[in-house]
Amino acid sequence: MNAEYLGLPLVKNESKSQFELEIDGHTALIEYKEHGKKLWLIHTESPTELQGKGAATAIIEKTLAYIEENGYQLIPLCPFVVAYMKRHTEWNRVLDESITPF
Image 1 (cartoon, rainbow, N blue to C red):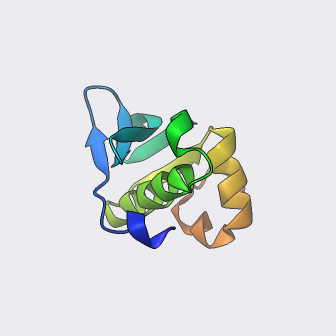
Image 2 (image 1 turned 135 degrees about the vertical axis):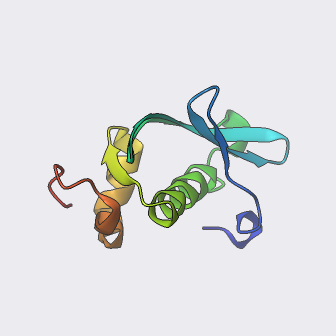
Image 3 (image 1 turned 120 degrees about the vertical axis):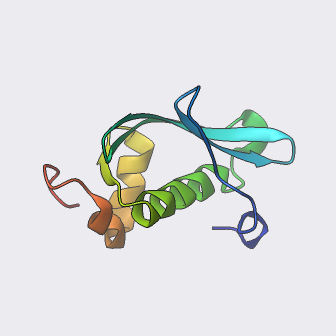
């Protein structure tokens, strides 16, 4: 993650069912569904103004850290999250037991 994003807070916007990361007045987001202690990550979106600047990677990393810190299990449905997980298999530790590790 870019060092400039480390101090930015991840917001869990429960009313919109999305995690949000505001960067330079723009919001990167991950839509999710939650049931009990399972989180389905459905869609990652980064505004055009943030594309190519590592914003999507930053929100994925912050969301994975949130999942781990709060005892959730991940079910990744978003292709971008799945691709990230395949490159960073150390995050297999947060996968739900029903998911084959990457």
